[in-house]
Amino acid sequence: MIRKADERDISAIAEIYDSIHSGEESGETTTGWLRGVYPVRATAEAAAARGDMFVIEDDGGRITGAGIINQQQVDVYEKGSWKHPAPDDEVMVLHTLVIPGKARRSGLGTAFLRFYEEYALEHGCRYLRLDTNARNAAARAFYKKHGYEEIGVVPTVFNGIPGVDLVLIEKML
Image 1 (cartoon, rainbow, N blue to C red):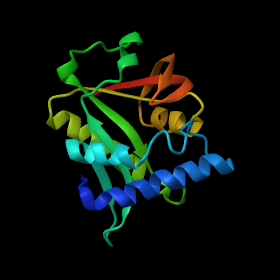
Image 2: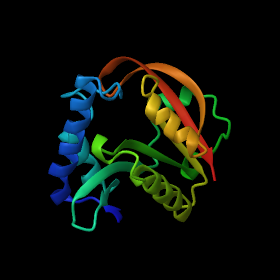
Image 3: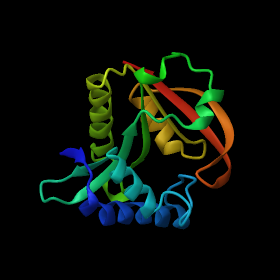
C-alpha cells in the first residue's frame, strides 16, 4: 500500500536513509548522497509536514520505501533542454525515492513509479520529471527500463553536496 506519510513514519524513513548511506559507505551501492548532508531525518520531516512524502507500507504495517511527490522543480531544471516543455502547473516531480537494499528487485520501486504516474494524472499533470546523480547507475537503468528518458546532465551543488552531475530525466504520459 502506498499512502501519504505522517509523523509516525519519520523514524522508519530516516532508518531507510541510514541504510542507504551505509550501503554507499560500504560500496554496496552508489547514490552520490552523503550521510549527515542528504537525505537526512529533516528531509522526511519537512516533506511529511508539507504533505508530499509518500510511503510504501507492507501488510504488517512496516515502511519499506518512501518518496516525495510534488510540483516543485529543482532550480537547475531551468538549465535543462526538456524534450517536452510544459507549463509548471502540468509538471509533477519525483524526489528522493528510496527502497532499502534488501527490498530492491522486489517490485516496490516499480509500484511506486506506477503510483507516481497515476497521482500525476489525477492532478492534471502529464509531464513527469525527476533527477539522479550521474554516478547512480542503478537508478538510471531503473528509470530507463520504465520509459523515462535522460535529457541532459547539469553540474551543480545538490542539496549541499558539491560536484554533482545531476541527470535530468523526464516522461510524458
